Image 1: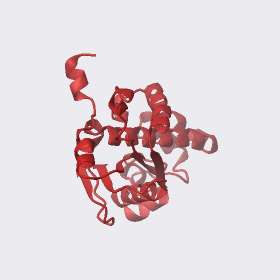
Image 2 (image 1 turned 180 degrees about the vertical axis):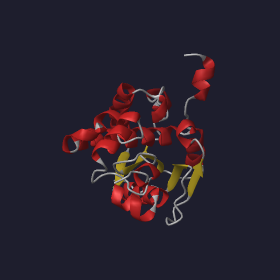
Image 3 (image 1 turned 120 degrees about the vertical axis):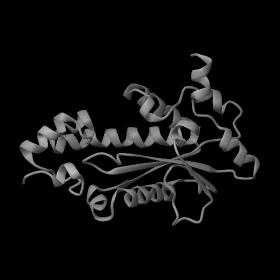
Length: 214
């Protein structure tokens, strides 16, 4: 790996700075599925053992889930589960997405993930989305999943969890090929919608669904 590539990988700079300020359990939060036309929004929360001297080296190569292949994400999913002090996920249904909008649903999924952690966090690092309903100190910043190793870990947990769920849902809705596109707006997905109309797990408030002539 080139030196520039190493420098561009997520790191623990923010986490270590917060650790020095006295925060012990820093949770990284990220989501998967905000832009999908079908299926739930999934959020993940991860707390890493920041006092572990070899933590950075043991997670070297971990990146934002969008920068990894499906095989790499599955491999990192196992490593993160084995390494983290705690991981948890939160799911919000497509019906709730339609009712409250996707930003509110994303916040709900993140709050569920935090509540599901076996260790209560004392600080949150988030990818852009703030959680004003929570009194916990937090830092939400753009491209957090490319900067913070903890948020990158959360992005992988969220993405793999959601992809696996969409593969399972494909068994109930085989006409839509959810196992291939995971509910996102591909040509195959659009063609299936045109032929079969929306399923029970589609987000009817999204523009491609609203534009269907049903």
